[in-house]
Length: 371
Image 1 (cartoon, one colour):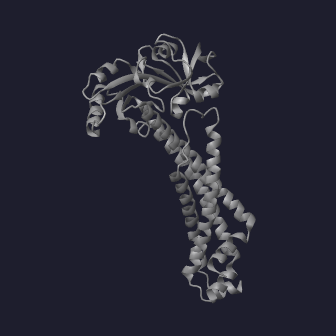
Image 2 (cartoon, helix red, strand yellow):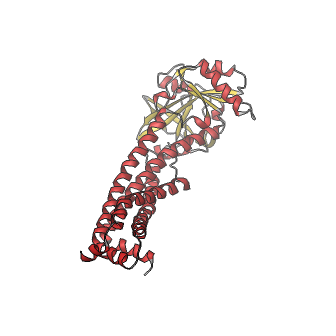
Image 3 (cartoon, helix red, strand yellow):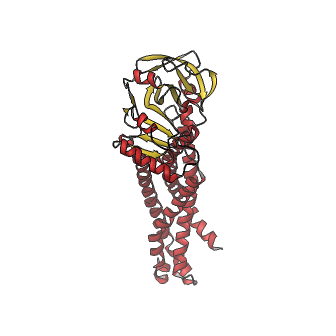
């Protein structure tokens, strides 16, 4: 009988108990994959959107949450006059309930600004000018709302015709309702207000000079911040809160998993006292007994981790197609997340097996054989 055989036999001795423990670990790791995958996915989706549009610096007031507070659009003129600024445009972006969709991004864009450039018209056309009360829908938004060119979309109290369906080449773009900035300002009673000034710098500008530009803008706009596009999401208060909540919830699930594995391993040690006594009597060293229990708990964690990754991936796929999520973000299922989740499960197993392993290694062979 090999060492590995002894380890596996210890787990399958009580298949129901082992199975329930595996289920507990799987649910905990599934929660990690789902919650953290959503958090990482949000950051990745926004980052891809900014990259597709070609934004280098974003000026906003992100202290208010996931969506920034509005401010006066005249800030754009001050930013545009600064050295190292090649182009600027303003955006008013709101998260609104649109008909049957509980939450959808509505993007009002300065007419003629570069945020319109990458929109590929699939059907219909773009608005004729900045005064036309009309919208174009990203292709995912059109699917979620079940709209086609010629239909109308209700935004707040106004009915606006859909004049085009577009491909924005990023999930967030494709899940948005897009219209002229002046039209959205009027609909939402935000005349003269925006919540983003997007900035492009000349190609090849060193990052140091871009950072200096951000500092200059911060002096002009002390209530907000100018950030490199790559740093916008990760530094927002709303995103940090969402990330903290996802990890804290995952931590609770992991703690439950630790307690479950520890209970299983303790029960296994109690039931195998006689067997452990025999192993000690035939020459097994105490550290090998400890190693055996740790291997059992680590294997339990690994199997639970692999199963949990599958459950988490399934959960993300389901969430990705739900109307409340679809078009807002692309959940992250990167190898890094999957490997991290399995590693967490193995660590959970090892930590859970430390006390049962130490306890089993302290048994007296003569006493164990008499039990």
